[in-house]
Length: 222
Image (cartoon, rainbow, N blue to C red; front, side, top):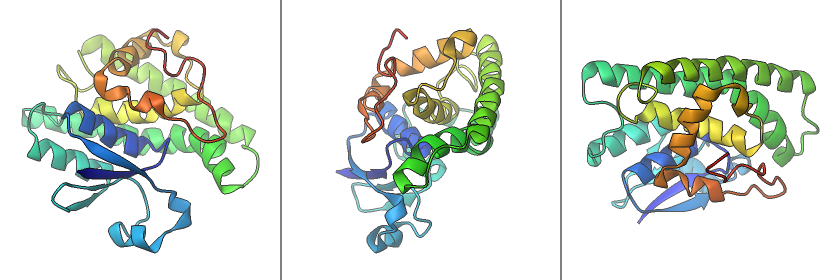
């Protein structure tokens, strides 16, 4: 049985969980509190970050991008990276957009201040950082709406790693109730579609100890 080391609201763990779900691959979840810096976990991934996937044959894989590419190679159908060189380039570009730019401008600000600080006992969220994250989020939601008006999914005709990366980040923010969906109908329509997929339902069951989800979090008709 595959095993995935994850953390509740890690967007990268969520991205891989969605990929595993889309591929219909069974796996066990193992919570890894990365701040504990366990020697056994560092032996698997010296960066100390999640996710780490241990495949059924014992292969150890780290980094969400590498894991998703690996899964797409061992289980080609459904393809999540793209069927052509152009499609792959666009899917990878947008996945990087969310995993790098969105994370730097939004996720770190909101999840970092509201959740990570609390788990580490580092005090109250910084209101200025929260305001910056929420302002940045609006720009990204508008971009998702722009893409949604022109394409079936974010990177093109088919669901791809771009959608999974975006959903990984936005689902973590949605857990906290930080996404102004009603002001961005294009982004909301896209999210409602991916939220309704069978691969997403496991994410909707997550509960962070001491931090309950927003009331609408598991509602498919939000």
